[in-house]
Length: 115
Length: 116
Image (tube, rainbow over all chains, first blue to last red):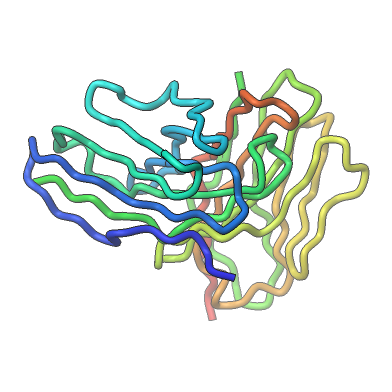
């Protein structure tokens, strides 16, 4: 069974440029998560989807970040414009549901460097 | 509000010894889940073990066990017979169970280094 797929693995951009990350969850997983992980810290939830509905986006900086999961399968996270402080690893995860009783499976992450 | 605390930024352990990684949590909810994840230098988060708040027995998965003490709100991870490949960051996490608005939060992690 394929795991969570993310692309690209690495991205280097200049500040003020846009960037997008893509995630394909494990087949059959209804819940999809995007996390931000700064160096030496634990992941912080940005947004959680139940199928195509964003049920928790309270931590998403909506002035520059956006996300979509149009068909309830794969998802895209976008930053426009990027700032130096956005340099981090962006992790995507999926689980059977979002009720908290199932483990999340993580992708390898996208390491973003903003110069 | 939910909170996860991992007080050990780093630990060194001799190979083949057992090691305990501390985790305390705070929540006013009665139904919640506790998780441990391993993150090697490659960066991928690997699920290790899960404990539900109503589970009466401590969870075990191979060399991993979770020492769940509900009254003390602690969920320590115990790794028996440590191996060199256990060197990694370890994160404790908590979610509320049964709530569509559940929050999932992670601790700050413990870096475990196994000495040969």
